[in-house]
Image (cartoon, rainbow, N blue to C red; front, side, top):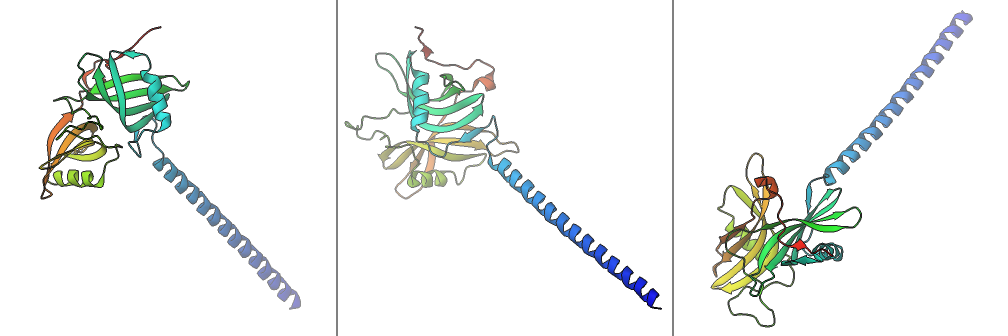
Amino acid sequence: MKKLFAIILSGLILCSFAACGQSKTSSTTATEAGKDAATTAAAAQTTTEAPLTGGYTDAASPVLTDDVKAVFNKAVEGLTGMTYEPVAYLGSQVVAGTNHLILCKAAAVTENPTTTYALLTVYEDLNGNDEITESREFTGSAAPAAQDAEEPIAGAYEEPETPVVTDDAKAALAKACETLTGAGYEAKALLGTQVVAGTNYMLLCKVTTVTAEPTSDYAIVTVYQDLEGNAEITETYNLAPSAEDDGAAATVAAQSSEG
């Protein structure tokens, strides 16, 4: 009888150890699975937040940094036939190097030049060499040139100290777009204001089509806001088709001088 009791007791002890081992193994497996899931989630978040190689990333501010100014100045060094003055920084694209998208005031080197706006792509390679690879002009009437701050002309557009879009300009654009369909307008830079019987705001906007597969491009628009707060888009200057659109080679109006 005692021998039988000892055998039963030994069996119960062995079963208890086995159950403990299984519980510990399950707990460890669950912990490791949780760590793996957390790691996977963190990796997915990092991938989502990081800009995709080859795609343009919008600039956080239209104000040109010293680094971008240095790249631009090196790219236009030695150009003849045209002068370019950077106005606003729009974004960058990571390639084998970096493409910088910059809005500029452009003028031909002539006796009586007319200042317009152009969208330049400046390529900075991995060795620090910089060049203009594409210049796109805005079609339609020439956008008003900035006036001399020391000798302002009554009724003319006044150029702001910075291209940062003011709250008033944003509100006017939002009001003007309330009844628009087919495209969305996002103000990227303030180019000028004009006091009339109300206010005209000249804005560089990113225009995105409201379609199943939306596309975006830039346009210079004039928003008129009257004294009662009503607003409307009165003029639009669209970009000329790019080389990808028409199959032509990218045009750079000013060529680099040799020697």
